[in-house]
Image (cartoon, rainbow, N blue to C red; front, side, top):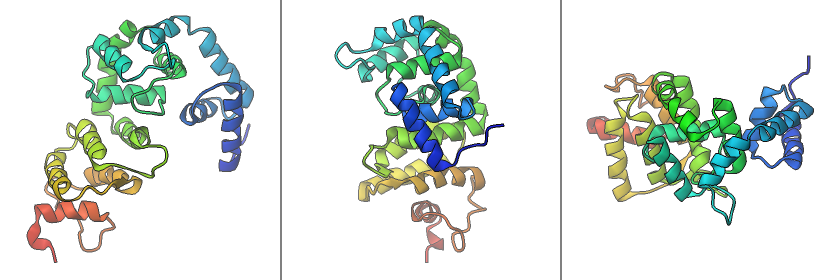
Length: 248
């Protein structure tokens, strides 16, 4: 049995695969995982996707710009319109996660080929038929929601930065977390108040810890240890916003 490569070996294999076929790091890592980090199997898997993806490619061309050969924000808007979903519907973020799309507002041809293949659909109309299942997964499976939530940090982050602007984080919290965690309604009021005074960007650690806060702490905040807990200052600020008399 092939042993799993270490991090350095993984990085080399990802680059090797990308020399053969143009795909992003997320897609390369996922496909190599699926093929037990066998470069030849991974290459063959991608070639099979490309050979069998003629109908999917036709769908891509419907939305893609002729100049850049990608689907931009206008194309994504049309894609959502044909799916009969709002651009702010969380399921479009789940679809982007399945596509392993790297940049918000852009779908590449391989994003479409890979994502449609994973979903076992050949067209937008077929994808529309599985939307209910995808929405149910997102609403009822916290592990899926957690994966999509974490993915969205890098999805919205600019490449040269290690953090995201507060308005982007606020949008993700509102889109992904409010239906699952009732505490988010009060949390978002706190965030709106913060924005009026201070718009410091949100680090990856703080963004991830907001998820842990939602999962671990009850709606009444009775489990929150503001004295000895290791929560980020940003989340401490929410606790003191709710209970100002506890602030020292």
